[in-house]
Image (tube, rainbow, N blue to C red; front, side, top):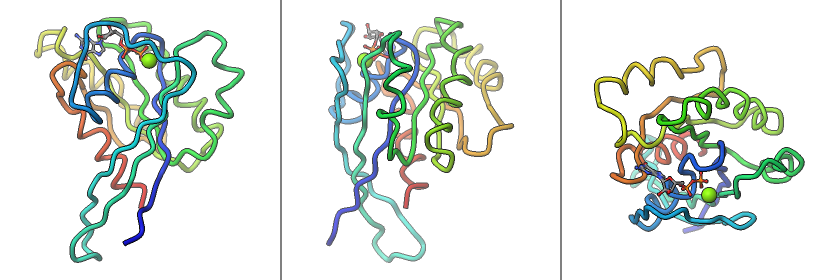
Length: 174
Ligand code: GDP
Ligand code: MG
């Protein structure tokens, strides 16, 4: 059986939990320390896509690109995003300004990959009382943009919705 690989990118402000989300998804681990990302780290994980057309579904290998947070980022965004079939745009529910930057991040990604799909992750949900989370999620829907699949409340710490963000993207990549 041949393996199909697809590139996806993590993107968002510094410190929102991009590296932690990848680590939780790929290694089922979390650390409270800042996991410094030097340059770009590429992780792999296979996911199973069930399809009505295929009896036993199909495996898809995700190549997950995680870039170091940096203000100099804009200059390299083009190269980083090139060839990406999907993106997880991440904000931090404890830092409102990171949520306000999400739209800009989406636009930077779509400028390079206008046909690729995007999932929005509002991360660190374990730090906010549950009653506020649905309201926050409603505020960051981006329904006016075509390629947005969904907005999830996530926690890299507890694992809440971490598999779901990657699985949702993966089902749209085949
Ligand atoms: P990045 O710069 O976007 O890659 O962010 P990191 O993954 O390095 O995370 C930055 C900090 O936030 C670290 O101290 C992490 O332990 C912490 N962090 C990341 N995700 C979560 C989360 O879901 N919940 C909590 N409580 N802390 C988190
Ligand atoms: Mg990082």
